Length: 357
Image (cartoon, rainbow, N blue to C red):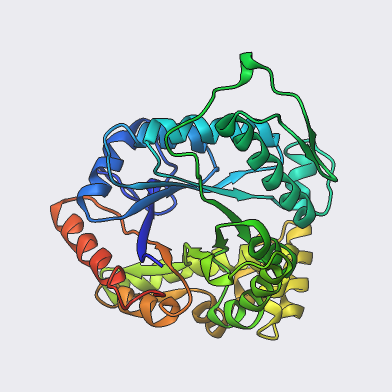
């Protein structure tokens, strides 16, 4: 597999940018050009505050080599046909550089943010991807649209809404996964898996890898064709003093994940399931300030990679190098010195023996 380092565009900007600063969509074209000069193989954008497909369309304008990934775009709030068209259009614009990462989202957001009915996400995601690919096959091969799944039934495509074939029709599809059922769906039908930052090496090796392999056996696929991608949870800074401040903010982020029941399995593998229950109860009572103390140093350093700028790339390689194919990583770029430093980090992370072969 090809080693690749990937960057969430909102984390690097020619101007001042701190890790949690909201992305200014108006700077994406310039930021993508900078990313390409720094030696990155790709960039990834999340569906958070701006539409990911529009972000990547803008990012494609000033770049020619970068892979462009949604990491991730929401699947279920859009129909498979809508997502198929958004990806098809973007693939035409970027001339074959798209990686389509899709996520299901948790129950509360599906119901209360998107106003939709909740269904079991793993079987629905499997059907969603097969339906979306049926639409692509219809357009590319001029075949009748026919998909008869448990969640989606598609059999209508008229010429007015058929964009026709494109030059690069094979769009890699990645799935955001953390629990075993979704990991199995990755093994069945996806080209890649996008790991949640809360996934530790132990959880990946002991729980996720076997689940992907089980899914692959269902469709007689080789599990090694799956690309493993991750944006690790990182605490890094130029020196130890500033690192301590950053580490405390990351401790709070781990606390947020700890309070999310959907992520319990990733903590339970380390024997911390009871603290998930405690944090979830505190979050329901809006007692947010009491959650970070539940994250002791052992948990912090297990879930997050903590180190200064001169050691963080080595630490990431040591922790994840044998497990993942693509890593999302960045530091704020405020001046040419920062850019040079980041470029050297990218090279270290992208060494041929640093990530999975």
